[in-house]
Amino acid sequence: MKTLVALLGTSPGTVTAMYYALASDPNYGAPHRIVVIANETGETKLCMEMICEEFKSLMGGDSPKLTLDKEIVEIPDLTGPKETETFQSKVAEVLRLERDTPENTVWLSVAGGRKS
Image (cartoon, rainbow, N blue to C red; front, side, top):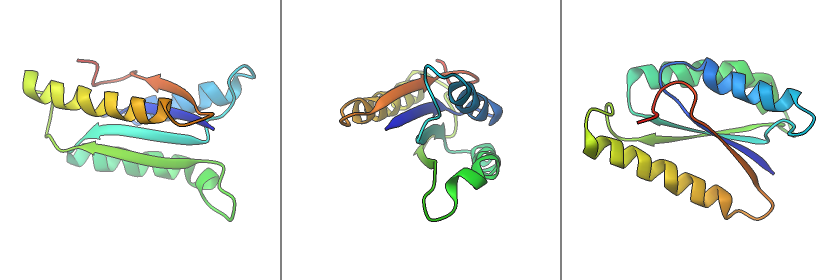
C-alpha cells in the first residue's frame, strides 16, 4: 500500500497537487490512500468537500483506486503552544500508525499551512 499523509490548511490544492505529483512519477506511483489531517473549522469542511470532488472518480465503483480518510484535531486554530502541541501530537500518532502498517510506503506533505 502507498499512503499520503497530508496536512490541510486552507488550500485543498496542496493535497491534490501532491497526489498528482506522486502519481505522475514512475519512481513513486499513485497513493492508494490519503489521510488528511486538519483542525476543526468551517474552512476545513469546505476544503474536504473540494478534495472529495476532485477525487470522486477514483473513490467510486466496486474497486476504488483511492481511499480518503480525515483526521480532525478538535481545535479551532493553532494559536499558541498548547494548540500547536496538540496538532503535532496527532500528526505524530498518524505517522506512527501508518509507518507500522506492514508493507505500507508513507509520504508526508507539509505544503501549505500547519507547519508550526
